[in-house]
Image (cartoon, rainbow, N blue to C red; front, side, top):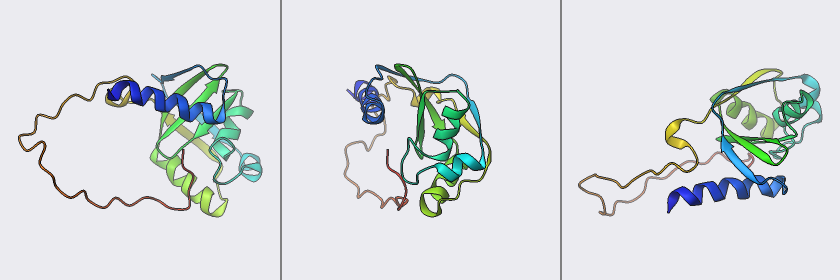
Amino acid sequence: MKTRKRGRDALAIVRKYFPKVQQVADSNVGLTVAVSQKDGKYALPGNPSQCALARACRRTKAADGAIIGLTYSYVIQGKKATRFKTSEGVSREIVSFDRHKDFAAGSYRLSPVSQSNRLGTDRGVSTHPKNGTTKPRPQIHRTVRVREV
């Protein structure tokens, strides 16, 4: 069943960096974090838990830790992780940072997760009449030289 798998995957991702986390939940509200030049200076490229935005989350006491990915981000508070949707602006800064160690200072927003992408949401069965036919999958471009969460 897809719904259980998605929740287990999220917990496994978080536990790789923060083993004591017991629960992952989706956010209902967004989070704005101010990143300073100092955060970018001491951050580590390619490391989702030590990037400039994750350091800013810890510095501002918004969280005990953070995992910042290209699509989803996790903010850890004690034994609970809250999942956010990573905005396009943050994703572009992550690519720039991982490639060139350049994270511009400023305010960045982590958005709430939409209703259709929440953990535990059943995606249902396709009702398309041609479901089951085999078509070659299109080639998908993956951004290279950036972190993988």
